[in-house]
Length: 127
Image (tube, rainbow, N blue to C red; front, top):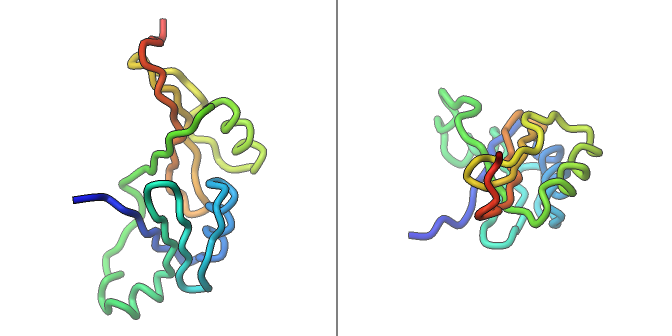
């Protein structure tokens, strides 16, 4: 089994499409109901809640928010932090190097989903 993508369900397809296009540096292709962003290794789609309901009636009943974060491995956490901070988004966790060597920061997308940008630094333990 291979994980190949994720679909974010939203009331604001255009807004999330622009946001993720800027954050990930990839082109968003689609329309007001469904947008695809191809990243290296996986596909992210943004799908409207109404479109999802039309596709599978009853699927949005009881649907809630939250319960997951999305992680993206980046080359330089600190450079990415400066770039994302300049986009005036909510920063959830400032850059930190964890005891196990991973450096990361978290921020929110316009729907409130948490995004984790991280890099692995094996052998560099926080003192």
